[in-house]
Image (cartoon, rainbow, N blue to C red; front, side, top):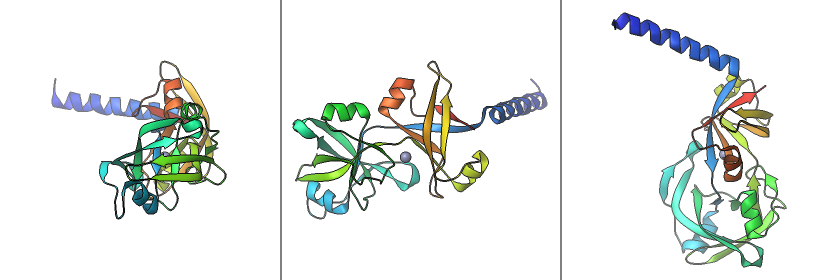
Length: 213
Ligand SMILES: [Zn+2]
């Protein structure tokens, strides 16, 4: 085929795709969050030893990282889950994020909360190789949310703190309501759901959602 022809076809296809996107709505890539733990530096040292610092396994969105370190989380009745990943960097308060299924397995009544909003949330114990941390509160089921930059928010026509609905067009075809918009200049566009939500809707990391106006 002539190079010019290929160029023209490419242009037409691109235009058609953009047209399609504009009709469909704002498209957001999905990241599925497995259960994980955020820790204060003091709690890192209680669990791993004095002066210990988390080591980076994989970079995540917004300057966060999956660390090489894992812990065991323990709920009431001493039901436990091993190999729970710690996300860095360290925070001002320790927090454990689990799915609703995990909450049942661990035997703890866990509220759905925005990350960081842990007041009055569920108690949980965290066990590391060098010690144990007991959190009076700090265990939550994360509220589903979309991270985006101020530019993306402008394009999508949403503001920080807004609640939207999204739909996923796949074999199951699912709509999620009560999706919180979180805008920050350090964020790259990504919707976060937990493993329960992903499994129920047959969604994998990298699939896309469409914001419904
Ligand atoms: Zn998130």
